[in-house]
Image 1 (tube, rainbow, N blue to C red):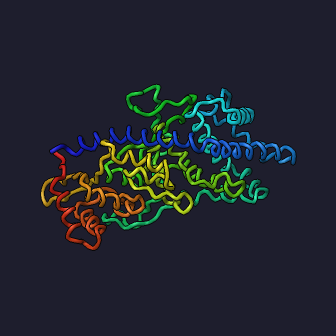
Image 2: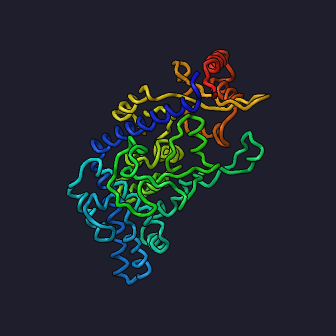
Image 3: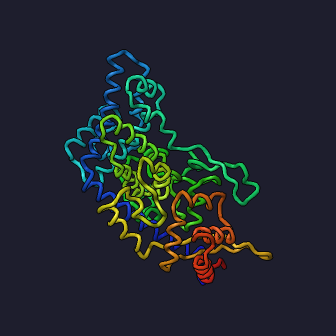
Length: 406
């Protein structure tokens, strides 16, 4: 039998490369079919920012005008060097010209669009700007209330008594200055197969990775599903994108296409800043807006509708690197507990796994960390409809093939 850490190590390495391929498939599709929509979306956000600064000057609102100068400090964005400019209001106008004239490559185009959304999120968080736009923009409430996509902790009562009344919510990670700063140009062997990005190196920016704390939903899902690709925890940029698209859709209709929500996956996953689970979590939790219902390891469920993209993503479901695994702990009466990895590889097992892998239901048995073997077995049997004989056979067959730690 293989050691669990060895097994998960290989799965993790394979999954890292596989998710980059999945994200690149989405990126290629977005450029091919949604180029015009994404450009219009980015231009609309740039115009909102430029117009507000001009409005503040014309109306003598120096509080807003001065607060808007925060932009010159936002030097880390890749869009500045891509568009051969510098952070600031002139730089933002240059980015607009760059997008209009199309002087950049396909991957750079997506990065610029994603950076505009990120900057727009930062813009919306400035107190004077937010207050002003609440008064003059009838649709600004979509951005002003974007925190609703970053839910406060939800309280669960997992199996560990000491965790009763402890909340799990949007994310739980070590923040500045404890986050891990990784630049592909410095340590390429750590970042392979992630793409390089033309960011200016500045303190506490670049491809940011974070250490997860005890109450991170993503950490628990990663451990249980054998993912363990640490990124940035739940993606705040993805949450901002949902709000920004709602604002855009209400204002001009440009943001009403649910496929545009995939921009975050197409750009941040290949950079190594976030994993697919970290971006799909907020998108699935807001599925009434995004039409996404992601099932871990079933990449066709990232597509918010039928068609060519869903078919292209289904190809990665059958990739040899895509292992359907659940990890749990077996409690022993004597000696150390064992870590067990259940590999779902037969067709009927994969069918059960697909049901378990719906990211919102996965939360229910992952939260609290490292589920027990008996708890997981009972959950799997319940998912096969009232402990049916067939479901029991599937579970028993999987348990007979588990990998135990040495």
